Length: 116
Image: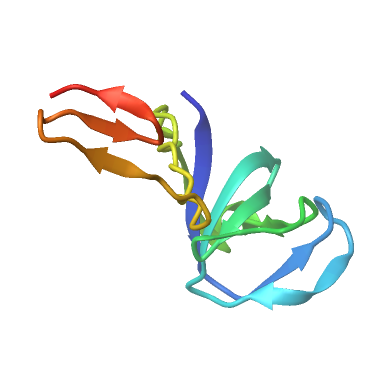
């Protein structure tokens, strides 16, 4: 089973381009929920912030040795293995069917017979 990091920031944190790298110009306020997939020393690689996927792989925060982020490793939720439902195409509004019924109970649709 795959493990992920889940946690909550305790203080405002600068988001960086790599572990110890340049600041990206924004921060996560205290109380922000985070999810990550990698830990390098005190650095957590972010994959989600407040439940929303991170759009770039270059987002890291420091856990400050546990004083900046309350975090833990946990099992990742399983993804469903069921195939998506098959969508039926909308009927073509330009298709016309000719249906004839006969006194003996038989039916023809576009010239093809269907006895009843």
